[in-house]
Image (tube, rainbow, N blue to C red):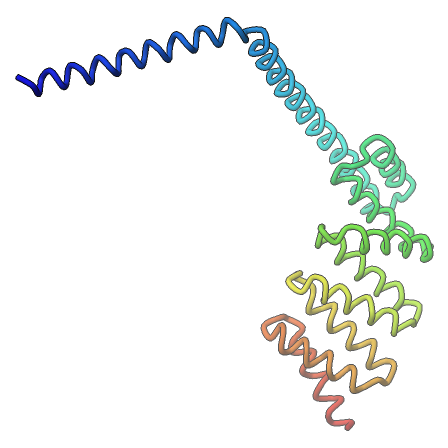
Length: 226
């Protein structure tokens, strides 16, 4: 007869605790209802504002991407003035977007194509130094600097930029090519030991790369020359 009584006491205690908790909750709500309402309202405002900002940012990115597409199309057709018009729109109206950074690179390429190398180098240096978090862009900027320097027969500067591209972004799909180009620049300067070292680096780091065979041939040629 005692066991059922104990179960009854436990059930009664649970019921009493529930009632006490319920009463305390109601009292707390009565005393603090204004604060609770204001708190909920504040949370709702934050959620709505955050949603609006996100929606606005997405629309901004979308509009900027459209202008970038038009700029790229004009660039491919060598209509540089038209391309620059869209780049200016991106930089003026859509700063801070992904397309704004891409527009900077495209502007550098336009200067490069026009032979306006100081302007191009300035933009590429900015991209290489400030946007290392975007491997594709930063690698391309270093590589473009190498191409410009090599075209001006400044092979030491070219090698420096090619090596920077490969060193900072060793997993880039063109890292082996950049390293090979650096070796070729050293070869043109008759700095054969440095060229050998770079070619060996291409072979050891990227043995399956399509340029690895070229590095082996260049190394064999230099070894033959002594």
